[in-house]
Image 1 (cartoon, rainbow, N blue to C red):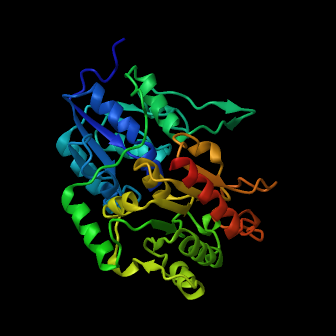
Image 2 (image 1 turned 180 degrees about the vertical axis):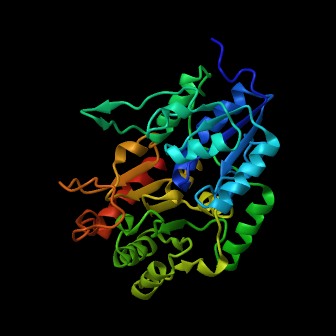
Length: 349
């Protein structure tokens, strides 16, 4: 069956905005490259997020997709008009993302027909609904439905993958060696932040106790991973724990160097946020502490993942800030998370 993309020479992909969603969309990028080996494929996403996909074999270049400001939109439009893609695929759901691509000169857009933007699209799937509400499904499958609608051959193993070059690996290794981590050390990465909002964050005192449990029971070197704006969370853990944690804040680990750092971990324990999906991409066992989000959106590729959550009447709420007492996260205790980690490690051994 012929695909609408068969004769496209330059294709733009409006990538998701959140780091975790970008990682879960990587099977789409692999699918497009396999089906369109001769096409020029350009990723459209914000500059810092491009580091997630840098060194991958799928893209011929990137365009800054920061279209929320007038200046950012003008820059994106100028870059797109210079390369003149014949078509674009939208992995975002907003009306704005479709409108800004059309205003940038791309007349043929494919994506989900939702959010009042159907008239701007040349075609695409519709979301499944139950009693008027969108039916949750794993985001990897959600994105691949666009490829299926486009009659593309789907990869047999649609698993998230990430890549980095040797120089990035060496730079990360130098940082870890500076902190006393050798090749035979058992390394646990703790990721206590979440750019989504405070509702996703497990209490710092719980992470502090978990760090002690990992060090005393696993003999682990414990890394504290963090991103911009998460200094206060990390400092609260450092102040409360009796473990000798390795705080990487001063090393300014960005989204690119985070890839080899996560790959080096023997275990990741994290809130439901971007580094969780890095761990999945590198087959690192990962324990996810989940509160306000619906686990059905991330149920794919879970063979080395354990989700610890409380099934409360108020969750999943998907609110950025909890209007209650944050029971969905506070009621998950460090001993419970550590027990889940031990069980996962025994399965993955």
